[in-house]
Amino acid sequence: MRISCEVLVSNRRLPTLGIANSRRRSCQASLGIGRNSGGSADASSLFVLLCTAQNKQGSRYKVAGNIEAVFTKFISEGKFTIRFKEPEEDLCVKADPVLAKSFLQTLKAGLTNRNVDKLPLSSLGPAKASQLERPKTRLVVTKRSDYPLTAGFPYSLEELKINKVKLQRIENRILKLPRLHTLDMSMNELPAVPRDLGKMAALAHLDLRENQLTFVPAEVFAGSLRKTLISLDLAQNLLQYVPHTISSLENLLTLRLDSNQLIKLPLSLGKLINLRCLSVSGNKLVELPASVRRLRLSMLEVCENPFSTPWAS
Image (cartoon, rainbow, N blue to C red; front, side):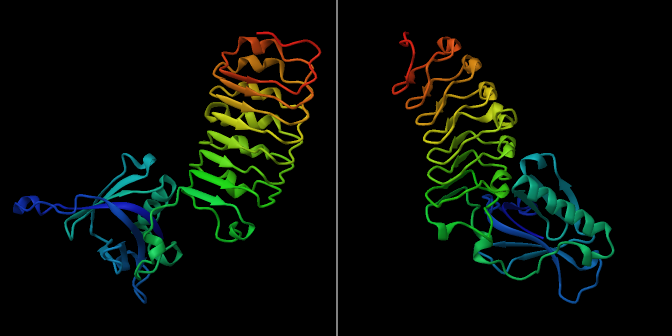
């Protein structure tokens, strides 16, 4: 197993010798668990391999009988420390929480399992340059040829923009990105929104304008998005209505529904107490819900609708 992470190496002997530790800054690294080729199939052949840009060949730390302690108090944040006996060094690691837990599980299994052949071990070879790069947090795709088909999306993505590539669905591998807070899939050919989009745990900004959406499932706004979503853009689609659950978006600040085919809006829209910008221009609305008057809006766009009565403030 090999993970990309940040590592700070602390030599415990230096302070006792009156020498300042010059390696007090963490650096991007590749941390692996593996064994020598042809080594015995038990813990005695296991090593932790630390590779950095300055040392791509890596430093090896024997596992069996050489780990004094493993500190996991902050493992939920992806932080842990491995204390080795020889050399007297601590590896202070910060990684993706899921990868950090998997790494420690493999390390624990290696210490207790006599047959290490069944573990997801890595080679003890030098790290590749790609393994030492900082995790990518932003990805922009504007050409179909750049859309990742086999490589997958980086697990660390926080912002993803896919525009003008004629996509017709939002894939599950996008929905499973745990850190994604901005998803912009505008200017595609999406006909529908998957129900599981509502389970995205960190999504704050969602832009689906200029697609071919005809339907948004009620479940989308009843899951995790209820607390995380801040801005929602569904303009320039084919929607005739939006589900009433949209009113449960507790922290929504901006809602754009322009240029659809909306006949009416949810009566409970006034429950969006944090909403500041509402745009519903270019639809087929004959009236607005009375609850809209309860909103503290700084911007309201309602032009190009066939209102039966004038809208007055």
